[in-house]
Image (cartoon, rainbow, N blue to C red; front, side):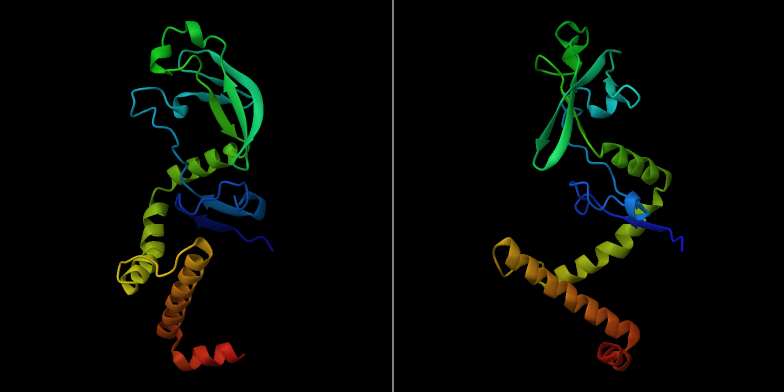
Length: 190
């Protein structure tokens, strides 16, 4: 049976380990691409100003130079490909590109999936608004239940358990409101 699913996530929910990107499972994901550089605010070109050429596996810089693949590395569990151009030391617009000797560009092995998701998200701008309306409400409600305060426990496993209990309580209360208590109890017994 050919089902088509669509999923929208914010940056906080987006995984960076290559798992759950969706296309492999037939899910059209809508996740904004992370902006990981402050170069734009510093008046420098950022990665978006460099055009990736997949057929050549290289980047073209704003000055028209080629930034070629140099090596692949593993950083924080992510496979990254590194690119730079040998022309940087004598480039006429180097001052707008980098403060170092070379402008190095990193490309994640699954970055093409991220670019596809970003283009899909740009074609459906209402998706983020709908996500905020449906997903942010439970978190606002849970935060209000908590008294807009901190978690009562410490360490990630304990905080994760505490949050899971809050989410379970929210889901149970919501199911009681939608189904009613008697049908919910009957469904849980079945």
